[in-house]
Amino acid sequence: MPFCTHQENKEDCLLETYPIVYLAALRNATKAAHSNNIIVRNAILKKRSNKVHGTYAAALRLLWPATNKQIEKRKREIEQGYKKEWSQLITQRQGVENFAQEPLSNAWLSRNNLLRSSRLINAIKLRTNTYPTRTTMKKAHDDIVPICRTCGNTDETLDHILGQCITTKAKHIKRHNEIVDLLKDRLAATNRILVKPTVEYNGKRFKPDLVITNEERIIVLDVTVQYENKNFLVEAAKEKIDKYSNKANKLKRNLNVPEARVVP
Ligand SMILES: [Zn+2]
Image 1 (spheres, rainbow, N blue to C red):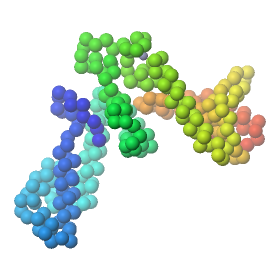
Image 2: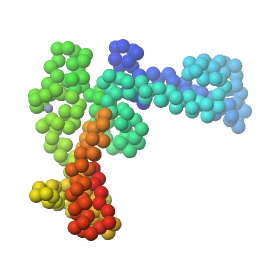
Image 3: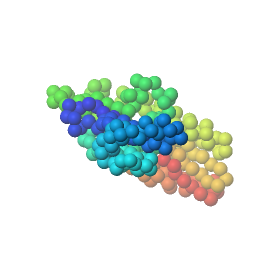
Image 4: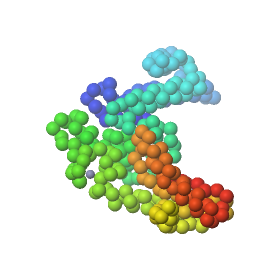
């Protein structure tokens, strides 16, 4: 469900609540029409109820009476429509294509006790690029200078705040290290783990986050915390694989294991 920022131009506002309300009413009516309770059934089959529901159905372009299956189908079509409209917005669309279909990277949205509500709201703003960065605000107010308010070095975009700004770098590193620690703890039960080992290759030294070995394979694992937009994740993953493939193969030969893998 897209998040409405209540722009002045109503056409830009995606939060149309009526389809949700109408769909729920139609679902309840269909359920009631099949109820074992004759009073419930009669109430719903009365002319007036039917007329109201007929109007709702017409607004949703749904034939009435409809089966539950037809209502669900229409609901999915409406949701798809939202997603499409959302992905075409100028500012809010950033990253939509990457995360719209990803239950894993959206898990924080459904785990409702994970973040305090104020943090959750900010997280949603960051995710939908509706956080009032100076670059975003400049689109509405021409007199705003878009330079980063904390480092003053470059334009204050979401990508800058989350990935490049020197003032958020410590948090960025902390997040990276927390992920490495979590992976290390989970993997240590069944594997041998080397943390930040020095790997020499062609006279140069490299330090991947983790090298994980067991009898079957060696895995070179290097974590990256990356803003999710366009091809950023794919490119970051490719970069890691390019960087560590040769080194992983060398370790494979040294340790005499059948398989080597780089996991970005
Ligand atoms: Zn900055």
